[in-house]
Amino acid sequence: SLPAKVKIVEVSPRDGLQNEKDFIATGIKVELVDRLSAAGFPNIEAASFVSPKWVPQMADGAEVMQGIRRRPGTIYSVLTPNLRGFEGALAAKADEVVIFGAASEAFSQRNINCTIAESIARFEPVAAAAKQAGVRLRGSISCALGCPYQGEVPIESVVDVARRLLALGCDEIDVADTIGVGTATRVRQVMDAVTKVVDPSRVSGHFHDTYGQSLANILAAMEAGISIFHTSVAGLGGCPYAKGATGNVATEDVLYMMDGLGVNTGVDLNEVVDIGMWISSRIGRKTSSRAGNALAAR
Ligand code: HMG
Ligand code: MG
Image (cartoon, rainbow, N blue to C red; front, side):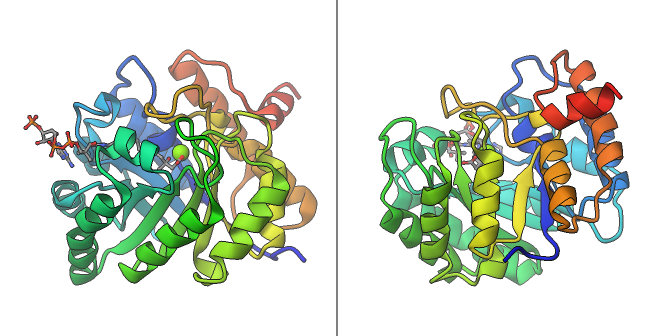
């Protein structure tokens, strides 16, 4: 059976924009977050506090957080790979910090320049500081359905990282298909395995749509009891360290599906269609949302 309600985490300001080559003005990022806030998203991933040498597009995280208008009830999350990032996030008054690891050794090396074990050790002080400061803590597991460098990723590796992130005190754990290679049965198996060690209410699905499987994967995840999903307006997105990966599943498509399924999101689809068209034109791209295109043409 499907959940009556899901939480949609809008990740376009971070995952959606981080891979854009030309620097996007801080004002556009701020306006994107503000428009998303107005559309009623309960959680927005607003920025990264990572090394600007690694991801130059996210170098203005502090300014973005300073510039946005906060909607009461919305959680504003930021990525923090280390203590330095956490300090920036705390100063910026982020509601939630995200430590991000991987189920694949090869991807861990390329994305955060350390082994999985080293990453967990690096996250420990971040987690402790978050708890101390009363900031929500989320843990993300990249390459949970496959890796661009090592290929197959055993389910046991995903469960193992989930267990370690839970031990660090994560309030929520993201199962991420970084390169969008997963298909429904495998997603079901991974979610069934992860929810044996983490309560399903704390597990989220983060799907990239490279192979067009995201909606099917979200449905499969809902059947496994998952009720938190990460999406990006206009299907923007991609990780600079995941070659060939395209954007996250488009928010418009997910909202259209949820509306049809009678699953409540609390977010207005028509408003999101407008935001998707607006940000696409601002950054000179065509939307990759099918529902967005169809509804904008009406
Ligand atoms: P490193 O080079 O091993 O570490 O990078 P370092 O400590 O030697 O730092 C390198 C330089 O960055 C130094 O500057 C540091 O001061 C600076 P220098 O001394 O050379 O002038 N630095 C920082 N600056 C600002 N904020 C910081 C920070 N930390 C160090 N927090 C590090 C290690 C983890 C820092 C680096 O690898 C990094 O920043 N990686 C981030 C990569 C990233 O953001 N990837 C995209 C997000 S993850 C993703 O998209 C996947 C996800 O969507 C889920 C999915 O789809 O799978 C979440
Ligand atoms: Mg991602």
